[in-house]
Image 1 (cartoon, rainbow, N blue to C red):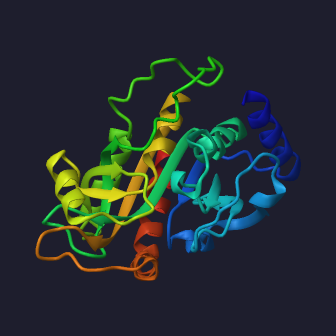
Image 2: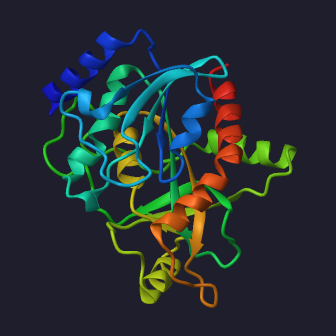
Length: 271
């Protein structure tokens, strides 16, 4: 695995001068956030050795280099999911590559279903912690060059960055939520009983990604920040059938708010 990570990273470095500080993973319906990246250059995943290919609508499959608030960033316009048939190691492979490109921070976003009765469709939830019910990507051989055998996960999401986001929301009258994100394999949306289970175990939102990416990011010593756009509700009395297209539409409506939050935090963490 190490040789493949290095091969991919070396190939990308040969194409771009930008040494990124922040890596960003853009989830369902949020790929257009790259419009806010200045001096951008891109490469298709299909051109990168060993990279998986995006198969989900709304995930364009491009790696975007550029600047946000003067800070070098690299954004994944589309991620990979366990339900697509990739191994869990393939799902998180690009995060490994981003680390080898030089990132120190990983920002992740996703579209998710809200199970907290105080949430509404369109809310943005800052992820304060997660419960991972997808196979753990660290199962198998451990490579000391990547991180320790038993990485600590007591602060999977950086508390200082979370506080930056919440302070920003207060100063700008944004109604940000915060909560625990639960990762399931998918691809089915949740049953009524599953929504109840997710809430019972301490979840506030549920989706099919993110936690495995954050696990390997912590394994490699990256500081993480994550947000979920609440695109549908799994709350008794508010549950209705929803399509992937409707989920994408809600995520799209929130890209401006999400962009402002990301841009502000990126400008602060590197000063």
